[in-house]
Length: 161
Image 1 (tube, rainbow, N blue to C red):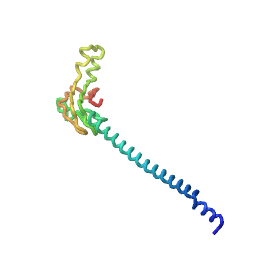
Image 2 (tube, rainbow, N blue to C red):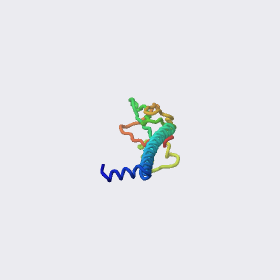
Image 3 (cartoon, helix red, strand yellow):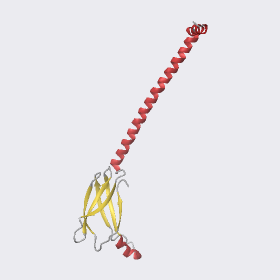
Image 4 (cartoon, rainbow, N blue to C red):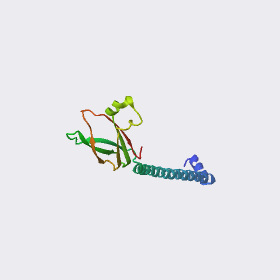
């Protein structure tokens, strides 16, 4: 055997070799513990993300989340009266939905002579209530009046803002 290898083996067999072996085992243990720690931290992050998503879903179910309501007028009859349909667009139910409908032709006719008494006199207030997710609710008849063109501003309010 080569004399350098023999000398190296003799040195490693004694106290210096044991110290080197202990150092290598210690480094391996630290590396293994670090891997376990990273795996545990990843699991905690994943659980935390799941909890955050569930909290967001619960909040959406309670408040209405990002769902919103809009109106469609359907089934217009010869007297120019239609059916007012409130539609919930979204994955969460809506609560305490109310709407104020402003006929812009009527508002335009009185805008030069507005008073507190006539400001909201022609508005139509609709209490929609609650609407389940992705469903619609019939709100009753809606008289369109005369003419072929009708312009409205509709202001909605609900629990989710």
